[in-house]
Length: 313
Image 1 (cartoon, rainbow, N blue to C red):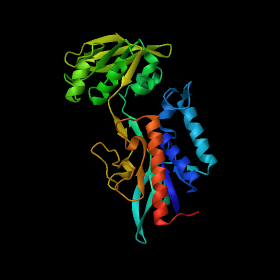
Image 2: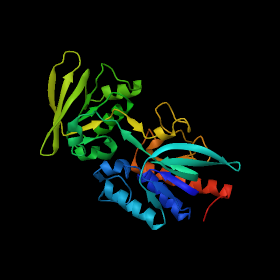
Image 3: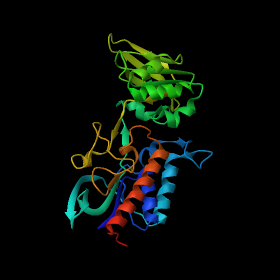
Image 4: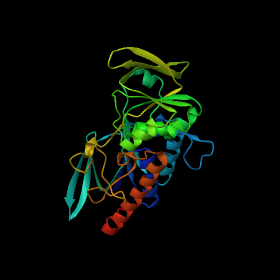
């Protein structure tokens, strides 16, 4: 029986592991097949405290993993395929199925993250992190005084565009429909900003580039089928995120978009199960906020076990 099982090895799960290990809980991290999370797809992280010159995303993940291991965290590969509740002596315990192996735990921290939705174009992967990005707050400052494109029409696309408008020379929003899906106030802010241009009824056909850098985009009018090429130094995709919570559906409470529902103390709908990082955060989605919720979840798991007096040392 494990004291704490942490599902996910991104910055949130690794922070939870550091705190749980330092509390002598001997945590087990189920790393998943995409160990490291979104940071493994990020080049320069310039807004994480303690790194005045910035840090590469994979380097930050590696350092966090080494720190977690130093305090006794154990790691295993594989994805959680099923999650269930087991009642034992009046106290819930939990069973996780990891590629055929059963693991029982007194507490579980779910830090499985969320994946940015992509367009499905070969060119977007070719230029990913070479001009194609999914986070304006993370990568927008790289394009100060340059021309950028945002793809999307919801609140996220509007927020990203407004942020970029304070940095870039120009922002062009590409949207498939003839009106935004965003809230009215967000629409007004975008349409009133003279640095932002909206191209309606338009789909992305291809992201263009040369010498390993984005140079623009070919777009197609959805009404008449005509195509146009526009120049840009970067493309920001803002068409939503998908939380990686499928294994917990039907057992834990999820919201209408599939995010884990958790309170301010990271507690989910089941006692002893905590959420952290982007699997429960559809607002901020930053490395530092993910780390913070990982810390909170680990502290809450420790307190839960102390109250239950069921720690295996």
